[in-house]
Length: 136
Image (cartoon, rainbow, N blue to C red):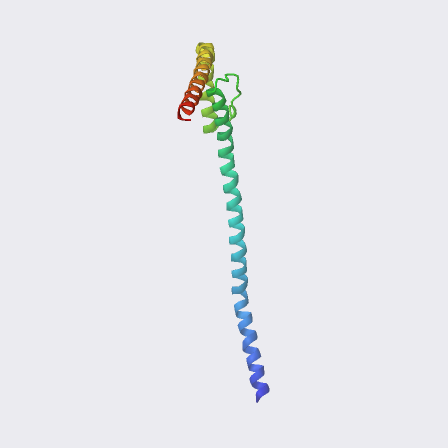
């Protein structure tokens, strides 16, 4: 009788294994698909964020050079057909207007501002030295 019970138990176990094998395969396929979609989504988000942030960072650096008085700066993104290209075109228009109308005047103003800043620094140093000498 124990051989019959053992055989029946093995038969039930084999039938259960065969019955649940497709479910196990489905779970494995679902895990693999989910993992691949997560990796693909992460890669796509990194690519998209870099394709947006890198041109903006380059354009910002060019705009800072322009703000510092370098009117010969080459703006990044002029040939692009997206929003950063539109911003670069607008900044180029401003750059050309400054270059035509007030480039020399603006550079003279910047030079005057630098001289005034240096004068303020030296006055502050002199004042600090006088204060330090007075207080001991």
